[in-house]
Length: 98
Image 1 (spheres, rainbow, N blue to C red):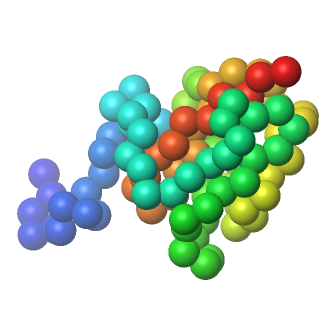
Image 2: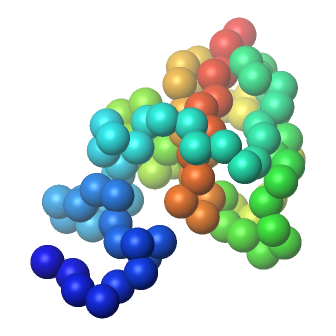
Image 3: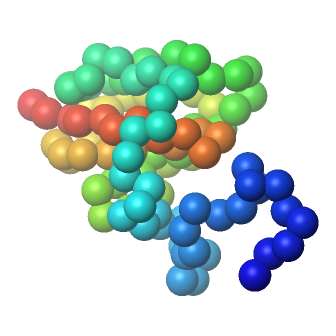
C-alpha cells in the first residue's frame, strides 16, 4: 500500500503487465476537456487541454491506440466503435461511426 502519496498521484487501476490498457473502472467520463464532433466520422478536435498535455486514445478493448500532442486527429482509418480519450486523469468517450 502506498503511504504519504497525494491522492491525485494514486493509480485508478493496476495494469497487469504495464501494457497501457485500461480497466472497466475508468470508462466513466470525467469531464474538463471536450472532444467533437461526437459521434465522429473522419476527424476529432480536442479542446480544453493545457498546451503540451499528452492525449491518449484507447480502443474499447482498453488497448492504447495513440499517444499525441495533436488537437485535431484524423479518424478516417479507425474502425467504427467506442474509444476513450484520456489526459491528466480525465476521460472522454468518443464514438466513431460511418
